[in-house]
Amino acid sequence: MLNKPVFVATHPRACSTAFERVFMTRRQSLQTIHEPFGDAYYYGPERMGSRFEADEKARAESGFSDSTFRTIMDRIEQEAAEGKRVFIKDITYYLVPPNQQSSAIAPSLARIERGVGTSGLPVVAGGKDTDSDHDSGAEADNPTVVPREILEKFHFTFLIRHPKSAIPSYYRCCIPPLVQRTGFDYFMPEEAGYDELRRLFDYLKDAGLVGPKVCTRTPNMEVPPGQVEICVLDADDMLDDPVGYLRKYCESVGLDFSEAMLNWDSEEAHQFAREQFEKWDGFHDDAINSTDLKPRQHKKAPKSDEELYAEWVEKYGQEAADLIKRTVDENVADYEYLKQYAIKL
Image (cartoon, rainbow, N blue to C red):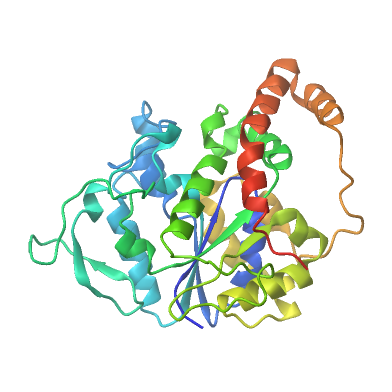
């Protein structure tokens, strides 16, 4: 089994921070890194997101106005040098230009030395050695701003949740009272994240960076040397049976699973979580205040589209409910496409 840094690619409100807390219990062997690329996407000189484009004060106060994709990769390399396996969870659209714009390699990653660091990640070079560097520009079929040479050093997995759960949860973070803490003062449908996740998934699959073996779905297929299987986890499956699904996930990425990973009720664990999650204030309260991950007592009974819409009208008003419904509808196909690869027990 390869020991590549794990990169959990996801979309907003996929219970990904609760998922992350499971792996934060393995601090002796795992170096968890929480959503690093949002710093460059929203605040830095290479920013692609428009949310804070007109708010220089917010960018400056974030503390990340100088963050580039290179400085983030440098940080990952430095943390990997501590000798632990790196475990990153991040939002996929932070790596992909929004609204299906054409992609090009981020300027700070334009030149990559053809050596590797102690973690197996490429060392980003600041020099101009034309024998070992390549110019910035689009890479064929690569939807991200990160060169394939870097992407192929990660063990990618994918975490998804149905839009009918994720989208209204994200909307709630963009209105009072949470907006006073999140700073996301309006809802942007293009931040749903399913389109970018699907396009990254397809690129990695078609390029041979994941698959063709699919975790639990192609049991008789071997994983070729140097490759990793496709591993997609649905958050609602995990919430129904944490032990079963997380055991399979850990097997897929080469980690030993213990049920002790599902409990983190200590002040040390809570303080560590608060420190890790503080930059995205207001988004992670449930995960910060949690003490464990237990199976839901009753599986979530499916509600009709009409019932869900009525709930959204009651909570947020009709105009907001219409926006939520439209955004859900726009993303269901991408979710269902990814769902066909999800772990099955």
